[in-house]
Length: 252
Image (cartoon, rainbow, N blue to C red; front, side):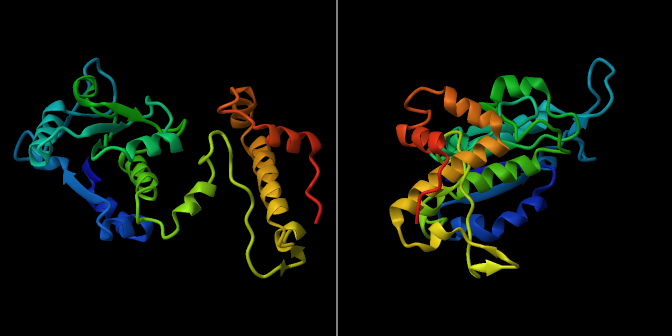
């Protein structure tokens, strides 16, 4: 996969050379290219923004530099990439979104700044907008980095053991992960749940399912409500319903 990013602050993306995203790049699974929007500025002063029509405060990124950047990158690729735009007005970015994007060969992310980008760019060139949450950030760089990291860790070779991702929160729809523990077995008087040291794989499996559901119900009641209202294919399984009904920890 190749991901191109159009941004006013390409240096911010140096952080993605570390950890799993860096590993994905070294393995050749991810090619990440950043492009400074000012390379397509409308004048020698590097101008890429202007005041909004209607007298609103703030500045808006002009359409010409963005269009020029998209044209140049598309020409370089030899095909049109899927164009993404981080925006507070977009739908929520989820694990399912990331899974969908891993099927793309080329993604291009436009990072807005100030008040955002001219709406005509969104209407004509953006395929998909996305939002991290119900808040506003200074620019699109951090959401873009989050999206890239989420997608990159799903690419082959990025994680040493791919099955690790399959036990993460949100891998299964509307479910958080379960609590995890490591050595020492006793830490400041707190012990690891006995079932996890029992060696009984079936009881451990059921404990994890139940703890995942309990944590979802406690910390994300919105997700839990969605989970119990879904159809059989997306909602609770019979085993999950039985475990929740009992609320009894598997015996050791």
